[in-house]
Amino acid sequence: MTAVAEPVPASITAKGWGWRHPGRTRWAVRNIDLTIEPGQRVLLLGASGAGKSTLLHGLAGVLGDQDEGEQAGELTIDGVSPADSRGRSGLVLQDPDSQLVLARVGDEVAFGAENLAVPRNEIWPRVRQSLDDVGLDVPLNSSTTALSGGQKQRLALAAVLAMQPGLLLLDEPTANLDPAGVLEVRDAVLRVLNRTSATLVVVEHRVEIWADVVDRVVVLDSDGGILADGAPATVLRHESTRARLIEAGVWVPGYRPETPTVRTGSGTDLLQASGLSVARTKRGPAVLSGVDLTLRRQEAVSVLGPNGAGKSTLALTLAGLLRPRGGGLTALEPLARGAGATPYEWKSADLVNRIGTVFQEPEHQFLTNTVREELEFGPRRVARLTEEEVRRRIDPIAERLRLTGLLKANPFTLSGGERRRLSVATMLATNPDILILDEPTFGQDANTWAELVTLLVELIHGGTCVVSVTHDREYTAALGSRIAAVDGTSATLEAAA
Ligand SMILES: Nc1ncnc2c1ncn2[C@@H]1O[C@H](COP(=O)(O)OP(=O)(O)OP(=O)(O)O)[C@@H](O)[C@H]1O
Ligand SMILES: Nc1ncnc2c1ncn2[C@@H]1O[C@H](COP(=O)(O)OP(=O)(O)OP(=O)(O)O)[C@@H](O)[C@H]1O
Image 1 (cartoon, protein in one colour):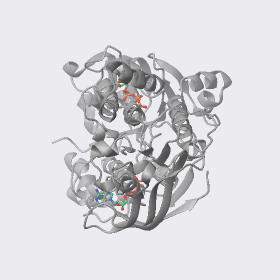
Image 2 (tube, rainbow, N blue to C red):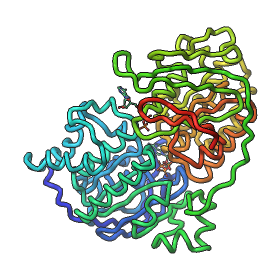
Image 3 (cartoon, rainbow, N blue to C red):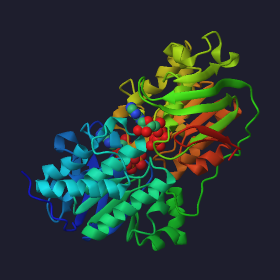
Image 4 (cartoon, helix red, strand yellow):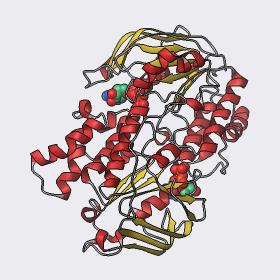
């Protein structure tokens, strides 16, 4: 069994380090020279696909052997290879779903500490403290699979905090959280760091969350090497570096990318919810009831609200994927087109070009082995297009969402941001009347964010109704969205953002 991990801060050294994933000609990250002192708090930035997660995985010692990829240079933690110092670091993955392994919340948090042979009488107090720190207030015997996305993110963090690692590695730990949750979780991390003095490397696109509480910002260059490195004020506010960071897509505080002005119309009604109640499971409780909402052509609706309030459940019901618990959900004629008035009863072939959905976890949706096939799947299904027509439809979408260089890649090997863009791109390629997106801007850098918003504005102008579950207020405003505010009992419509 591994020895108990003492909460002693770890140091990091990289010398000309790089990693190339199997099956890729391009290095995910390379030419990294970096020394991080024990106890330093570092914010790691860079464009989507620049190699941030790869570096974190390298530090956590989970990249695998040479046959699982190619390494250049050297990477060490306290002078030892990361694989030999695994108990020293704790990694919270970008996608919390892939991190959670046990059925019950309490066991999940205890698991890592148990593996590190923490004495039994210490484990449960640590479990409670960690859950308390991250603000996850559910019974210890709750089912891990019945948590909402944001709740899972808190749980994954609590499980790592309970291990009291000397090096805390966080990959976009607040990306699924509501605004209050973002600060709560950040402060939880800080409390733990203050207690343990652990070293921190955190990856996050939304710079302002961490800029004031880290000692140092390191920006990876997509072409290899480090674009900028220094104190936050120097790196983020200095004119010369600012311009380079903006060009690289970093969300520099105070800078917002430009997107076209949206003209939402008072378009034709497509789908009408009246007194709708929604539930996640057949027998479980209704999550929301009394929802009145009409979706129309040429407009955007954003579903906002705290974690666990029922946003995804409402979205999946509107999408025809969950059976309404009660009340009415009626597809009107311009949408139904002979398929009947009840989306839940439609065949998937009817759904595909009427209501397209992008799930919160895009990988649950991938069906094929390459990015190209994934993009071609919908258009081929909807209409009998020739090879040439399919290509003409998907090539510009791939180009604009920066997927062109990845057309041959396996969807499951993409970076978090790339995966999300692919799942949105597949729906854009099918061009449904209603497009339902769960957290579409999650994990995007400023350039890919702006490209995504621009594409959606064009779709709205073309008549599509875009419904988004989101915590991203700028996105909501950029699409001129009407707001459906969800609070755990019902949804209330507010005026456009
Ligand atoms: N398991 C893998 N196999 C093959 N290629 C991979 C794998 N994981 C990542 N890559 C590729 O390596 C590059 C860097 O990915 P990485 O996840 O490190 O980027 P990132 O900076 O964290 O991006 P994001 O901000 O989008 O999460 C990407 O082009 C990605 O497609
Ligand atoms: N598969 C499931 N089985 C049972 N209950 C679930 C399931 N998924 C979610 N729930 C519960 O349903 C409620 C609503 O969850 P939902 O995912 O709709 O919330 P949300 O507002 O989208 O949250 P988030 O912002 O965290 O993604 C939560 O209380 C959650 O615990």
